[in-house]
Image 1 (cartoon, rainbow, N blue to C red):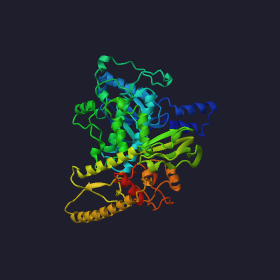
Image 2: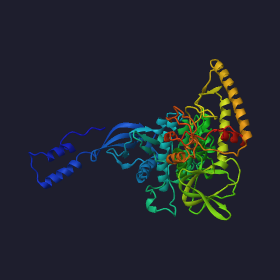
Image 3: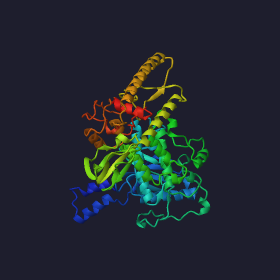
Image 4: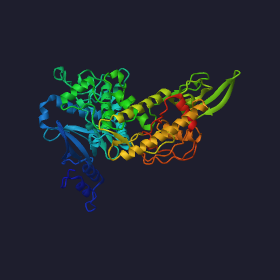
Length: 584
């Protein structure tokens, strides 16, 4: 930090004279001395210190405001930058645009001015931390905690960008190097020098729209130019087409991609090669960069944000953010539906294809017997209904009427079957992994179900195998698997003989990550959730679960919500599902 100037004109010396009991002053003299102590006449207001960062256009230096006694950052331009009118225009515009965007996740601008040598500068809040690029460090988010932390940062960047869009500003250069992360959770979206200001819409308030006070550059100097970073660009930006908010949606998708795999979507030797890839929106799937696949919902979100056609992307950053927040809070890919009082969720006699979890509201289950309304039970937050028919296309035996406005989570058979298909594809990818044979780190086994790995988004962690060292172990495992397969075959045969109707019981491991925590606890207490599953020691701090439906033991911690996935059923037919239900 720049040192304070010595001498009698410093604020500290003025304050010493003000409170010197040996030199009595009148009230007016004391008042004037107090003001001069805060606003010294002979001391320059700003003093500049060491350089903090350097770029192609300018540098950021430490600054100290003598009046406010505040440490700040000051951005200044290199001498060669003044030879390019467009770059000077961008520097001034960055200060003015950022100064009008008053948001907690956008760094505040304090002053735009010239120093004693006539050099332009603007001062801003000093952010002590590191860039998101440095935080990622080129490493993929291969564990839950790392991914969860990065997604929390992503949500805050979405807040800043959504606010800017509401003020008519699109950033046009979103990348990890332009996101600063403070030491205490602060997140700032920086570098608005390439921002574009959209025309005022008729539905918007002009007082809230960002104003552009600078004279526009002539089209002859700007036509055909592409501004931004090719590795994060949308196709329309790379092709120098008109832009709107959806261009920033694409760049946010590229940022999310980098948070997942450790590098942006377009990898090329030169900026021109990256620009060619950006024009076609060609990039590899996020799962191709890691051994253990990412959560399916997260892959769906990033894929939609990175669609080539703007109409196929999220319509706004707020919509993208909503899906990420829903994933973090544990709603997964399941749909949240709302019903007004008086609506029917299901009707008696309809073909059932979905189950519902009550998040809020009050509902009545009733039947019509001889034309009379017969109430069966009442439903509230945490209750589950319709689960017995989620896989069996049978008719509903009762109706569910909404008494008070209700919010429900809808679980369809299509989503569950899609998850089962995804698991089979993952197993195929494991067997054909390019790094050679892979083995699973075995986790505790769920009763009559698939193995659970100790880490990695609810799936078994993978690592290269050593065939020579593991030959004996492989033979023993194969022998155990054959014995287990014979036992399972006998169990299924006995279950088919019982020939009961298919019934699916939702378990705590399934519902966790798809319903709010308090609702899940309520459902367990009411007996609607099967908790007959062992704990998974070491799985993101999840405690052991007691055996037995409706027991009063603890559930996994809410911090593990992102890693809990749908229970991986290996049954492929109604008979197998009936066998699993009968075997519980």
